Structure formats: structure tokens, C-alpha cells
Image 1 (cartoon, each protein chain N blue to C red):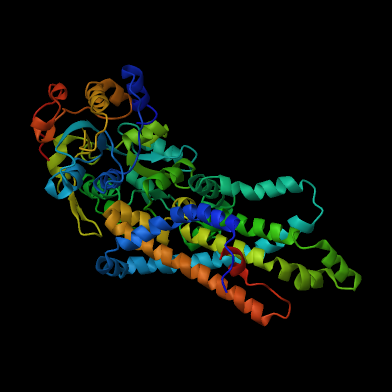
Image 2: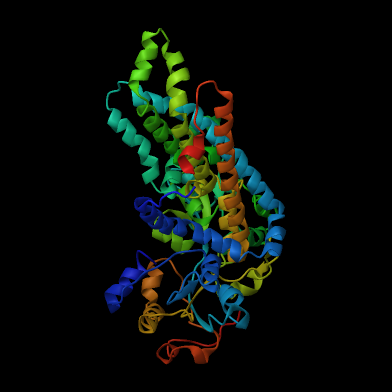
Amino acid sequence: MMQRPRPTLLIFGAIGSLLLLNLVLPIANLLIQADWAHWTASLRDPRAGDALRTSALTSTITVAIMTLFGVPLGYVLARGRLPFKQLLISLVFLPMVVPGLAGGILLLLTFGPYGTLGGPLSAWNVALTGNPAGIVLAQLYVSSPFVIISALVAFTSVDPKLEMAAALLGDSQWQIFRRISLPLAWPGIAAGVTLAWIRALGEFGATMIVAYNPHTLPVYLWVKFESNGLKGALPVAFLLVVMAAVAVAISTLLGRLNKNESSTAVPGAVRGNLA
Amino acid sequence: MENGVGPAFSKATGYEYKGEAHGSLGAARFIRDHLRTPDVFISADPSVNRNILMGPGNGDLVTWFVTLASSQLVLAYNPKSPFAPKFEAASVVDTKTPWYEILETPGVRFGRGDPTIDPKGYRTLFLFSLAGKHYQRQEIPALLGEPLNPAQVLPEVALLANVESGQFDAGFFYKHEIVAQKLPFVGLPPEINLGDPRFSDSYAQATYTTPAGEHVSGAPIIFTITIPKTVQNPAAAEAFVKFLLSSPDLLKGFGFGIVEHQVGGDREQIPSDLRGLCAGAYKP
């Protein structure tokens, strides 16, 4: 059955597709100009594989830590009666404003071998820079605001009446969180987690300062560009695009699984928000 | 460049100056891959012109270059490092504390450039191999470990950030970088610091092969300047080159060494106004 065309949607669609074009064209261009034979050869370089593994491993650890710590923080910021709450929320935004390079230097001053925290730790032979731990620290710094803010917004948008009703029926605060607030807020949180994951995967500036070795994919991309020019960098750029797509796919899948298994209705996480 | 030479040029000529700093290899590749179209290109290594920008294979983007100044490797250190007094002692003439003995001390952290992407990285390798011969101590080159030793190797910005913030006690840099950053440093003898053209022959005995298979050998650290084919403001570009070729004191003040302005490539292609400032042919 034909739907009647709706002018507002048509106009919005036309405006929006211009922006979409700006996002999609560079990547389409990359694929059109692809030199597949050379690309597959250069991606078989063991250093590319190492960078891929490093990126996959560290960004996954980062996502786990961000979710585990960021969701409770978002909940407290949304529901808690805190002094200086607005100030705390602005603090969470801070890393998004600080350029990666500056963020990396700040992290170095804190966690480096002579840093405020890193100094005492290095006496115990614990190093937090120049290794995967440093990469995770840099990724956490730049991407966890996405999780915290999306959790804050998602919990705030849950109708407090539902939580109050559950409280009146005798649910404990944990039960209310587990059965009402979290399921209702989950789609928004999941979208934030996906964004944060992609941001962590693409992190370059802070990572390069805090942990140049082992190379993550973005650092390896830069090294390849500096040593081989565009020819060296483009295949790695392609690999990064593929990884981001995989991260989105996994997030979507997890959102769906959650919907099917859970007794409470959890809407498809990323589908609902990103699609 | 951005903080000293550029503003001095604007003040002297009235032309606007917009600089963009990259490693020489990276900058040249930017130009060759048509990602940047500069009016002037300054390289920290004459061979970068030859290998990446000159010749029909590279679209003849550069046809000539002039040697501008020299620099040398120094060992810069953080003044707050626990080992700073030792480095300071090493920096005086006729010192009893040789710099390499400090680097041998357990607990000292020092960094160096990445030989894969940065001429300074492989030049530091040359420095250590020359030092082993100069001081007749074969354990000096061993201080570096593997050429790409992850405990030492960092890209340019990160290396500077690590030494300035005190996470590394020391690092190997060009002298002009350290003069600009106002960090204390230990000067190294001309036989090993790659800053003195008189030692070209002995520098050339140090060699390195990059992971990409490029063979490089030691040579004096010479900066070159050229106006590539990408030039969009020829008059301003000429004024800038002229200004630099005729301001030795300015360059000296920024830590550079003075050299004859020798010509690489095709002398006929040099704008006639600049030709008068140039000396004989550059021999690598």
C-alpha cells in the first residue's frame, strides 16, 4: 500500500542526506580507489595483525570497565541528591573538550614512571605507560564520558513515578534499579556504550603520548603514513573502518539478545537509537 | 620556526607566515601525495628531497634545494630528574663524568626517536655506533638494545612530552629543538654528534636498514630549503628563502650551525634573485 508522501519528512530527509553524504563520501572514496591486491598483501604484515589484536583487546577491556563503572556513576548523577552536582557533570564533559594530545600529557604526568600515582607504583614494578595498560587508560580518558553522559540522560528520562510505584510495592532500591530503571534506560546506555567503543577504537592523540608501543591500529596507521605515505596508510584506514562496523554489529546483536532473553521489555539497544 | 623565525620574517618583510611542522619524511610524503601544497619546504635531511620529491618518478615536485644550516644531536635532560646533577656534571668541558656512564646507571630512563619514521631516530643509532668507536668502548652501542627497543623509542612529540614532563630522565634531540624548548643538555663531541661536515667520511661508516628495507648511512645533519612546484605565492616564497639565506645570526640564535649555501639539483631552476646567495654544488 502506498503511503502518502509527507512533506516534512521529505524535506528533513533531503537536508539530512547532505550531512550523511559528508560522512559517507570519504569512506566510499576509500573503497572506490582501493588497490585490493596491494591492500591484502600489506594487511598480511604481522605488524598489522599485532596492531589489530592490540586494538581489539584494549578497546574491549576499556568498554567493560567503562560500562561497569560508568553506568553506576550515571545513575548517581541522575538520581542522587549531590552537592555541586552540576559541577560534577561539567567535570565529566572536560575530557571531551581537552585535545587528545593534551589529555595524553596530563595522563603522563599522573601515571608516568615519575608521575603522581605512577611514581609510587613504579617502585612496585607496576608500569602504567608504554604498555596495554597505558592504552586502556588513554581510551578510558577520552571515551568514558560518552557512557557516563548517556547513562545520566537515560536514567533521568525514566519516569520517577514508575520507580516510586515499585518502592510503594515494597521493592528494595537495588530491585528497583535492576527491574525498572536499568531496563528502561538500557537503550540509551547501550547507544552510549557503542559510541564510546568506537571512540576508544579510533583514539590516537592521547594513546600516542601514553603508550606508543605496542601500536594500536590508529598509531600503526600513523606510523605507516609517516614511513610509507598514503599507500601504507590506506589499507590500515580500511581495517579501522571494518573494525568500527564490527563493533556496531556486536552492539546491535547484544541489544537484540537482551531483548529476547529478558522478561522485561528491553528495546533493541543500538537499533532504536542509531539506525 | 613557528615561534621565532616565522614572526621575524613577517616583521622584516610584511608577508604573512603560516608554518606546519612535521618530520621531514612525513612532510615530504604529504607534498608528494598532494595532501599539502606549500610555498616553501624545509627538510632536516637533503636526501629527503632526492628520494621523495625530486625526479620524474616524483612528478619533479622539487628541482633544486639549497643547504640552509646544520644542527647536531645533543643529550637533553629534565632539570628535575634525580640524575640531573650528573648530567650537569657531564655537560662541562673536560668532564670526569662521561654521558654514557650516566646512561649505564640502573634506573636512568632515556628516550630516542623512532628509526622507522624519523631521521633523528636512525641518527641516534649512528651516534651510538660512532661513540663506541670514538670512546673505544663497545658496550656503548649495546645501551640501546634492539634498534626499535620499545622501552626507548618514541615519536617526536611524545619523546619531547616525556622528557619535559620528567617521565624520562633524558633523550636524544637536535640542538635547535632543545634551544627552543629551553631544556638543559649535554653537548657531544663533533666526531659523533653528526653536526660537523668535516667528519662526513667517518659518519658515513655508520649504517642502518629500516624495516621497510631502506638503507641509510650517517651524514652531517644539514637542513635544506626549496620552493617546490606547489608554490602559490612565488614572491613571498622567494622573500622567505632570501630572508633565511641572509640571516645567519638569527639561525645561530636558535641553535643552528652556519653552513655554506650549497646547491643540490638544477641550479638553473633557482630564481635569479636567490642564485647570488648560493655557493657551489652540494655533494652528499
